[in-house]
Length: 115
Length: 112
Image (cartoon, rainbow over all chains, first blue to last red; front, side, top):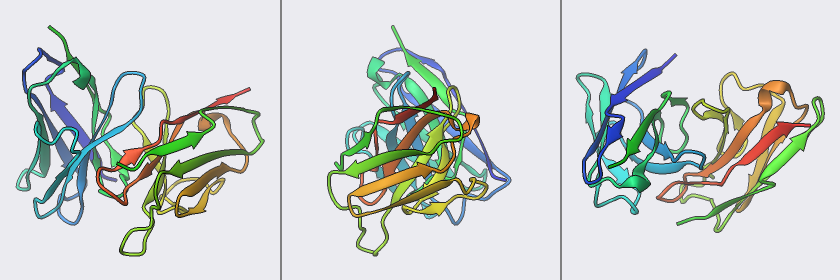
């Protein structure tokens, strides 16, 4: 079955840019939407955005000025960038397959923003 | 944004007994394409969420048939016919009819 493995810096200082990459194995980027979702420690889930197989993107308006999702189809990967981070961006970040429902999820990466 | 609410927020249940979680949306989740994009996810502590149900009532592959979903427009329910120990954790409903997609606050299921 599809496996998603993500990586990126786990500790950032305020104002830096969060950058995470999600690698898709045992599956293909094409034919699906791919999502990023985050979860602050001890709290609920927040949808960040998605990218389609054609590269079209949708973002949560609350993050829209800071967020970018891109894909490298040749590597079967997609990425998240979130600029000008603050402590409020501290969360576990998940990548997942699917747009309107997410059927496969990564294990998640805890990203902590601290001075 | 569509606001999702869930009741109860915490549910102590007895093993082998049924459990039910309600989810309500601030507006109809019927999409212009005729589908209703309401999903249910389950998250155990320290684990990523996993998909249980999509489009109100469709069980994802491998999900036991003791899980079922139903509802329409703004009111939805997830039921577990007989709770097992592995069902503990937090259950979220999620709407994907309108951007931004939004989640309910979660219902924590624990064993009495």
